[in-house]
Image (tube, rainbow, N blue to C red; front, side, top):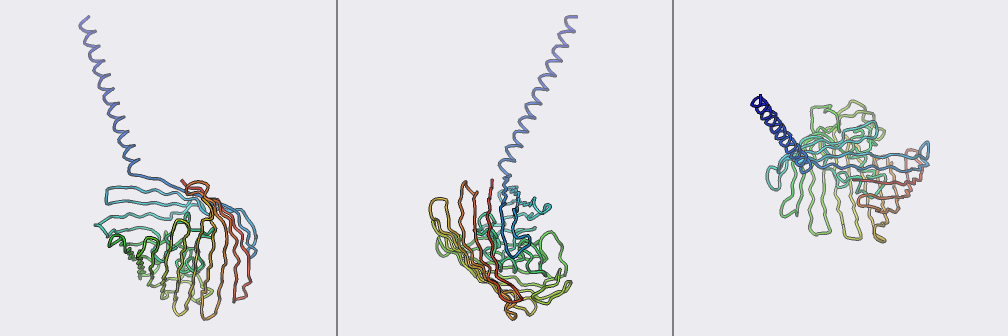
Amino acid sequence: MQKTILRFLIIVLSILNIHSTLIAQENKTLNQVVNTLKERISLAGYAQLGYTYDDAAKPDNTFDIKRIIFMAHGKITDRWTCDFMYDFYNSGMLLEIYTDYKLFNGLTARIGEFKIPYTIENELSPTTVELIYCYSQSVCYLAGVSGSDKCYGMTSGRDIGLMLHGKLFNDFLQYKAAIINGQGMNTKDKNSQKDIVGNLMIYPLKWLSVGGSFIRGTGHAIADSEYTGIKSGENYAKKRWSIGGVVTSSKISLRSEYLAGKDRNVKSEGFYATGSLQLVRNFDFIASFDYFNPNKAADIKQNNYIAGLQYWFYPRCRLQAQYTFCGKKGNGLKNSNLIQTQIQVRF
C-alpha cells in the first residue's frame, strides 16, 4: 500500500512538474511574441476637428470633423516594411496599404496604395501642413485631393501602383518614379493605359530643397467637367507638372510651388506660397497666398489670401485659427470669406 501511494505521489509530482514547465515555456513564448511585436510594429493616430464659417456655403457655419486617422507601420525584416492607414471618418475609408522592400542603398521598391509623388505639398501629412484647409487649390485640383476636378474625382492624392524611390550622393538627391492606375484610391483602372509619375528633389543646402514633378497619362472621366468640357466615360490626355522649393530654419519655414496641367486641350495653372514665423516659443504666425485658374482660356480664377495663428500645446498637438479672403473672377463667382478654427491631437 505504501509503495502504491509513493508511486502515485511520484506520478502526480511528475505531472505537476511537466505542467509547470509547459506554463513557463508558454509564458516565455508569449513574452517573446509580445516583445517582438513591440519591436516590429508601431502604431500612431491623429484627429482634427474644429469650426468653420463660410459665407459662400449653405449652411454658412458648422462644427466639423476633418479626419480621424489610424496608422500602423510594420518592420518585417531589416529590408522589408509594410504600412497601413485608415480614416474612421466619412463612414470609414482605407487610405494607404503598401509594402517597401529595400533592394540596396539608394533603391527601394514600393507596391500598393500610396500618396502619388506629384508636387511637394501632396506628400505632406495634414498634421504638418500649416493651413486648416490643408492643401492649396492647385494641388487639390491637379493631384485629385479634394474632387474639385470632377473628371479625376476625389482621390485624396493617392493611387494604386508601383514606385521606385531612394536618395543618392549622401542624400543630396532624392528621386521617385511610379507607374499607377491613374484612377485614384480603392478602385481599379477604368482604361488600359497607366499614368507615369516622376519626382526629383535636390538638397544643395541644409535649409533649402528644390525640385519638380510630373504626371503623364490617359485619364478616364468619372463625371462631366465644368471647366474642360470632358464628359463622363471619356478618355482624355492628362498632363501635369510642378516646380518648387522649401526653405526651413529654426524660426521660419516657407514652401512655394508653381503647378500647371493640360486636360485634352484645356490648360490650367496655379501657384502658392505658404510660410510660418515663430513669434514666441510654440506660437506661430501663418500666412499664405494661393492662386488657381482651372481654364486659362476662360480666365476663371481664384486668389486666396490667408492669415492665422497656431499654438503647439503638446508635441504634434496644436490649436489653429485662420481667416481667408477668397477673391474670385469669372463664371458669375463672388468674393467670399472663410473663418476656421481647429484642434489637432496626435499620438
